Image (cartoon, rainbow, N blue to C red; front, top):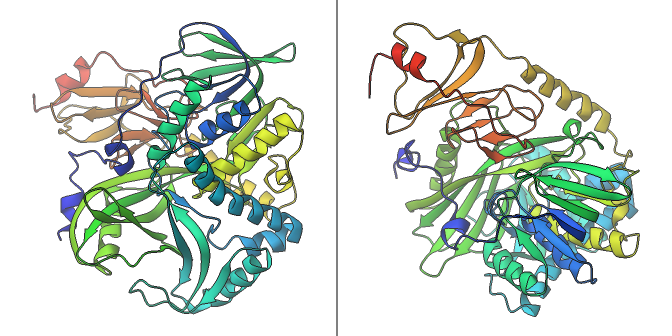
Length: 522
């Protein structure tokens, strides 16, 4: 199959999960309200937090900037695993056996808890139990794989060392985790939200929170439409936290993008979920739809806003797939954004050491399905009991990871260099930009991003990120302006695609100067 057939620049990527479910339509918040607990973010983490918190009789609302379960939860690989790469031996060596055991128990519990919720609420979400494998094709990683198998087994996980996998991929070594699972995230989350709504959990969409203020022991949340929510407790589950007055999360999180293709192969998929132990990353899992069988192949991670021709990531995945399967079609492709922490463990718990009523769930790495339900269980316990059996390993204020200071310095130096814009060309006579192309130029003394759509219409925005002032770069694969510092993404119109930014880009409404200088008139 010609790889270029899946990388038509005129076609936007399309998620299988979104294509096979209907869009939700909860109302926008149009009045001031007072609640016990406000959950900011209607993805898997936010909805599950609301589900657990409300089960304790706490009046809870969910507020989403867009539509629930669409952004991160609608662009995942949807693997429900306690297998998170080679993580357990690392945690044991850096944090000790006890905290490694907390991490293992939390994620093993999460796998079964998702099935329990689905069964209790009669939700059909294509939940399928399967083994998960981490494999290596390099001699240098054999010892690490062996150590991971032993450590995970010692922590109570059904893990074992194997020297081959069911896929036709030659491997040097692998660790197999039994009792893992996969599902359809929106078939799980949308019906769950409907059940929650009937039980009194209010859900508001298209209601971006742009500010949080403390006032006499309560929090006042303000939406983009200037409506107020007064809450005793607040959970920020908005993927990358937008609240900057505490925690300094902008200095200890970074964002990565990864790419997914859904492959229709002639061969029958042997089952199982797989990820390699080296770079570039490669992840595989099966997907059984009502009409067909697909294989999801993911990988090609890179920092958001950094990289050249991003279409090449889809091409690389297609080439990898062709080395294993006979490909008939690749009907779906999409990308995902992940928040990464300095030590590889999510930040779940109190937002800061001095915010007993403000909570955070973020930094799930590539493992947001189990990370989301772990967040919900921990935060529910902190709110209702004041403590959780797994709180220490996930504590957002932890300071006990070796190497985290080094990672802090490296990541923040990387951020700093992107605050300084490089040389940009002033727009001049005979300037030209064709349909489907984007460019960054100096316009009226500002750094401007220009995009001409397929209809010939110009879209011009100021490419300084509204979050913290970093300079944006063009994402050719998704047709968006992406921030290389903190992961905010903006549409060609300047509207927010992903936070932490809460304000759209300013637009250049007068395009006459550019039009005058462009030789081809459309």
